[in-house]
Image (cartoon, rainbow, N blue to C red; front, top):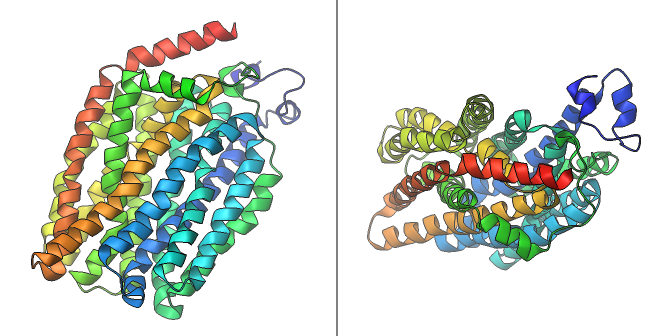
Length: 448
């Protein structure tokens, strides 16, 4: 009997019928991963189509960069982060496929309705709706992936899922840029929200795996209280340092993603279709390669030493940050964009390792909640504050007389925050081996 078969449950295992038919369980797990990744793609299309549309929306509404930072980051990010906790509790207690379907329908509809918004308040309400909907999809998806893929291949699976970020951004920038030029920004929102509606029916009909399937045992029926989950995770030095590092890394990344299109308009005078095309390839392809490579490299390297989960993203920051600064400071547009390819790829390396380590530090009964806690910390700091901080800094530099270069210097200041993130990745590497082993041993003893 193969390891694939041995890892499954008994006769009541919902995967057993497909597993008995010629070992189809491997294909099934990748089918589930593909659907969840497509949903994640739609998630990022709906989240980041706003970035390529930011400048014309700002001009039509007649608001400041600070207000646009609030709309792109804070209005979305705070509710996305805070609603992730209660929705993760539901994911640990209810049918995850149905929860994802409801949340997918909500954020897709709210995105489409952004196309009829007439003022900043209406945008804020709709962006809150997008944030609430998107908050319910990732933690539930993470736990389903963890239940389908064993620890030795889990980081790769998580990286494949996380690469949906880059595919979504590719479509958001490329499609959003040209739809903006041809039809205007309102139609870009409507078309961005449409694909998610179709995927609602696909995920609704999907069977989900038993909890603990890939680990060779079932999770018990009871669930840990929220405060116990926080105590467990925050009691681990690795999680504390990893959460800070990931939050700071995303602070830089979210700020750049939301504001680089406007920077290219103001400082380099590029057109929206041109910007959308260039950034789609840089962020979509280079970022996707970085995300996927991070998972593969860590799965291979961490077999010998789990500290590679933290060493890899720390090293990526060391390599990538100087190139990011060069992109912002150079007046040569073409050279700057070529240089930006490396930091975009490097900044994405942390996603697979961070998600995999978070799942490894959490007992089965709190995995969805563990993802929600990690995402809460990442998004309340990164998404909630990153774009806002860049907008506030841009307004400050404008008042100080920097003109069209104000946004350039705001992005430079933001990029330097990654040095702080690197320190915390290194601190997490000092405890990651021992704490992953401790949690795994405790879980096995509990299950036996």
